[in-house]
Image (cartoon, rainbow, N blue to C red):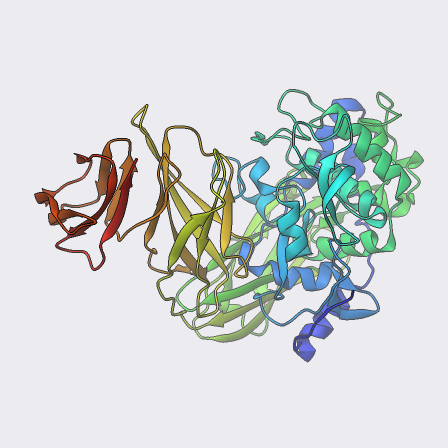
Length: 569
């Protein structure tokens, strides 16, 4: 059944989508670094080519989806590869109700928003797609595969137990529709090259030990899918739109047989552009000065920024045969809102394989829509290249304190954290989790983010025996976060619903409770359920352990508004 989600789209947004869904060509010389290479050297060259690209803020991704994932017959419609539900784009960065920003290669496999490994993969739109929320939740972080016994099937997305030899140890796999299997295969080929330097926490499909990055079973699957589902117009159009924003491309779309030289039936052969089946006038370098990236028509959309905040984007300037320095300047319209640190770029740096990372900063001084242009000229180029700069400044958001709800579906190693949705517009939620291990005495704190503001739960599947977990939630909007919510505790027996207000946390443990607080909270009393006073504590302090026999108790402090319900088992 086809369902409709109707939303208003501004005329300007429709025109922007239409212009960016238009076709373009591969920049001259873009793939010249791959020519004459084979094996690991070829894969390394792909890695060096695509890994350096403009990295966006996560909250602004819906702006780019309106260009990369629009239907050609109606630019206001979302092209969803996870369902046949009809969704419509709406203005701004708030997305489409019922849809998620989906990491087709799950972010949990490497850690997502990760300071150690960088943020590029977290917002790389070569593998991020708008996805029906129900299908995305069913997909979870399962690997690709072919389903033998579906537990979820909406006619486009299947989730269920894998066929023999697939899954890499996962009990379930995600199988896309036949018309999109090649799309996902080429996406995974790109990710295996672009982020081959990542350390993979989950190794269902990728590994940390071989240069090929992909496991044998996943190589067989993805190669078969890529051969059976040829590159479509959808992929070609999307690749062009990605280049306009992110300044890189998926080479496995431009050169469909490229994967065969790394994982397929042409392993060990030398790859030559002249034999690639792609016209040499768009993929080879002729010797004249050329600017490979950015290209004419590139757009940098900074999204929505709150007044008082600033945001940086990096634009990689890369050329070949440049014989003079390049001149760079911001001009026209609201140019004073945008700034760059240099006025020229050395031809030596610009001609290097890495190119020059030009940082562009948007620092708004007034609310409203702002535009400008970056002009790149000289270097021996004929003419110049213009990059459009866009941004919107909004007032500082007002964010209310959220209410965290008790965990559900608690099992040996899995539970679902829950909270009430924010009453105001937010971008997404931040879950802060603290894990206490009674055996080692160690405590660790971690943060996680949701894909968007439609999600009000988060599944954790890594709880170990002997651990007590707590979580609290904040909302995020335009660089601001709300006050932390109350704290929910899942103790070692699986009991949930224990609440605390910062700076105090009450962790239930075998034979008693452990107090965690950032400051002394004063007098505390503990009552049993008959109302009898069990403990009278003059000054409740951090890391205080209070032994209690089995039973259910209420703890009240001099500084707290609510009592804590404690169960000792």
